[in-house]
Length: 490
Image (cartoon, rainbow, N blue to C red; front, side):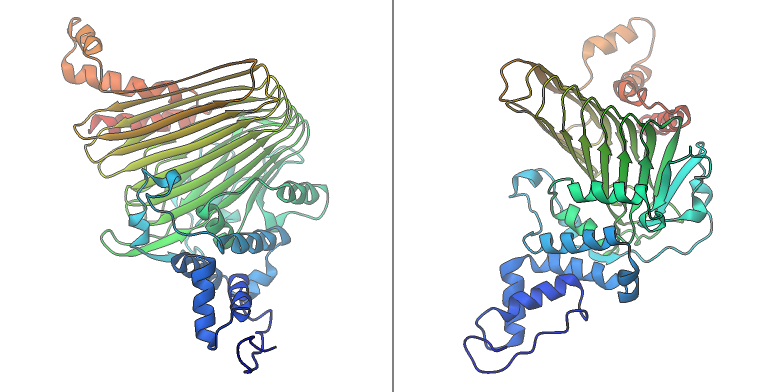
């Protein structure tokens, strides 16, 4: 082969010697009319994507040895190929981009981003769980030695995708992945390129895992020192498949362990959920990581006819925490209930971007978002979108966001958004941002309760409406205790 503007022969690289991302960049470079190979590669990088993004993605690919990549199960290989292809058209977002207008990512951009290595450490007492069903994921790797899964009902699978035996379960998981969960942003694709493993929870038709939930502990053991530029990156990925008429309750908990509780790291997590006809998922999501960490998470749920998805979210960790939540109702008579409670302290940003798409008749949805900003440098962001499309007649959808600002110059940016095309619907939304009401404080003081105690009681009760919805009592009590201590110290 030769370049179209010169006669110097150019041999294409062997197809198996480079990771997928580099192969695509080199292939694109060879088609450009330049005279120097280095210039061709630079031109391809400039034309196809942000060089900073490509640099991160190549670090992720380099962290996976060729033998590990070759031994990866087919779903993981397809995920990496698809994500690396999509990355070529993505660039690092800035505050000029509407989805990130109020979310400053300079903390990540200025850090030395390095893939977290495979964990090698003994059992940590922080991994204790009150549930008999524990799926432990450490730095993106499913850890069989830290998991407890033997008591799961017959037919239920929880573990690494590489441990799935050939048969109907593997076929159903492959089918769910082939259906796709939509297009995510840059961080969705970075997770696809960097995920060293994929955890799978599979519940067959008619089976219920409700009384004792599956406790998905997503842990981070690597971290840089505070003040250093080093920021290890972990990319955990979880797929949940619930078949027709099945039910499952699970707790997704993110936390630092092994000395990283106060260190700097970046958790870039993805969870995909497919709920079959008449199925039900109760998803409790607890994020209490290091206040020096970054936490960017995607949750994508697809609900088939007459299914139920309930999400209860409590987030108080991370210097930067962003949750991208996308839910699609795929049939009529579908129920979606979303509750979130965030706490923003010193130099913290808590961001929830949600999208709920209703395309079918008689859909029902409720979304409640609550946030407390307790410090003048705290920042809350809420961007909630509900789309009621043309055929979603007789839909009942409600959305409410309420934020407490407890310090001068504390900031909240909220954007509730309800788009309605159908004409036979019952929909509402509302937003409120305020400090505690003087009338409420006066009510307490008139009954002999001092001002400090009154404020503490009102602040904690503000979030208890969401916390009380966590169905698993030990986790609910643990979250309650932590938040009481946290809010009492403000």
